[in-house]
Image (cartoon, rainbow, N blue to C red; front, side, top):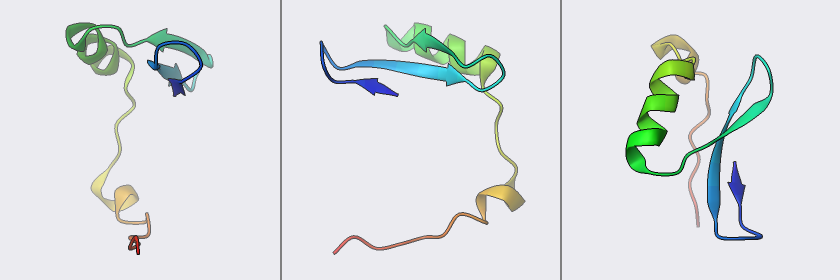
Length: 54
């Protein structure tokens, strides 16, 4: 999620508790995503339609 009102901060919203985690520096962002990221299977990602921007 991006908060564009202030300084364009980025947050990861953890689905289990709906808490937002601030993705400050790249190292912080990678740590949060490694620890909290749920991931996706190949079969699930293939269910997402591919579109084109005109």
